[in-house]
Length: 208
Image (cartoon, rainbow, N blue to C red; front, side, top):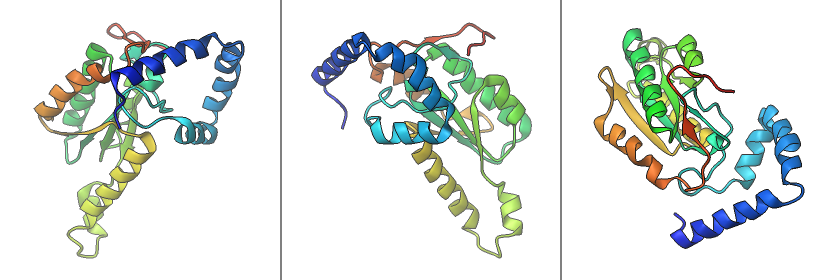
């Protein structure tokens, strides 16, 4: 359930009080980095303790991309972008387009689900790339099951949505993102907490 404005104000007040606690800096500088270095502990921690309502409320342990920086980038909503059957050049343009939009807006983290292993492109933008089996490859071993590939993609997406706690799953084709998804991405910022410490980087700027 989406919190009310009054609940958001109370959450922000509690967050400010928490930052003033004597052990807060120790937890921030010593404990949390150790947890984040362990994929198992990090995954367990956010699944057990993180709230699951509203954009920007869930701390999801994944790379933010080079388009944003700041103390709270891990709380930016994760948006999946699904595109299959693209030529390599079109898929690369899609990644560039979405990452440029992230830099412009500074309000989301992209995760790409493709059937092409464009890992070099993903590394260049420091974003996550998940793969599905290409339809033609799947068909060669599908034993005549016409729905097998669609079921494979559905299962992969279900697992990805759950693991990364996706806020939205956008669709794309050779022309890029669906226009409705572009409009949605442009208004995500309205749903983020007011005290989120995130800002967009400059073109080509890298961050840790």
